[in-house]
Length: 67
Image 1 (cartoon, helix red, strand yellow):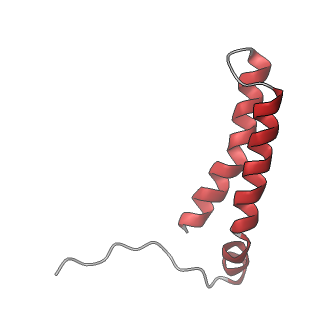
Image 2 (cartoon, rainbow, N blue to C red; image 1 turned 90 degrees about the horizontal axis):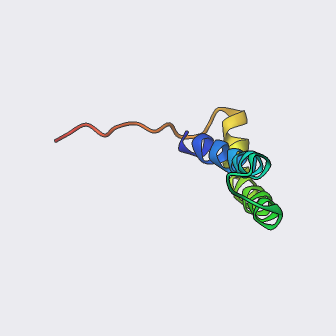
């Protein structure tokens, strides 16, 4: 389920850049475009994880017991 966090972060990046750009506290058009491309690539790379999540077969993050 770590991939869910990665996908969420990838989706949030362009939103954060856009907000910073619109409020004048940072960001700009090229940076926003770059963040959209990078986010799309990250989500695309997780497509197999997304499919396993849909099927319910994605491995869960579990702490290993100490010896």
